[in-house]
Image (cartoon, rainbow, N blue to C red):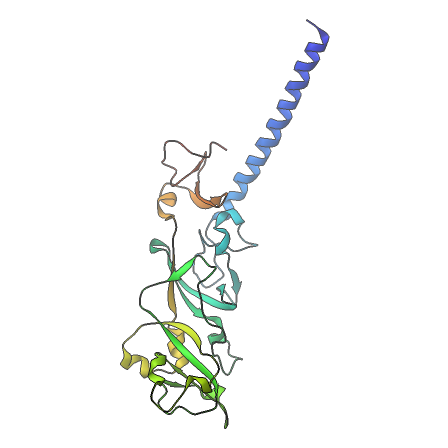
Length: 258
């Protein structure tokens, strides 16, 4: 056989062997790292799993890109509308979570009032059921005697602050929204009016509110022995031998073997 041909065959085999070694090493490394997708906690006992993930504790493929959270004082924190919110509970079965503004629990803050309008714009979340907005009015030049909630900590002799559920209540009651800064809205969970009126505004806000998201349920993946994660921004179920679309029990994987 021609020596040049033998050399080409040998060279081809070497290249194939090197590429195979690199591929296997990468896959083994990825498979080992996939154990990082096991549930984590910030310390308050709430399990953080797909689609949420904690940078520094879990790899980005363990969750969905826009669901990253941080830990503070053992609480999981989600930032929305330039404010930090404590995740008080996550209901993975129906893709929803309960939030309260973190500032409400800051013992050093003597006047925890919303300073930014809450919005789900630019987030993967939407309002859950039974949510109503509480509107805060600051720096009003006129006092409003029939406010739903007085906000004394943000008031002084010349400037007044209060909160109402329905801004239309201000119409025709000797008060104009023009005398205040534009209102700041904060979502709260609906309750009986009698109960809400018996509370102060901080207790009303601490009730929290529910947001929901669209996405795949992780329960089927876990029940089959897999761990949920993402690949190219798509939900996948990481199993021992394949990356599956939904569960390890699927016959064929779209993503191939490890």
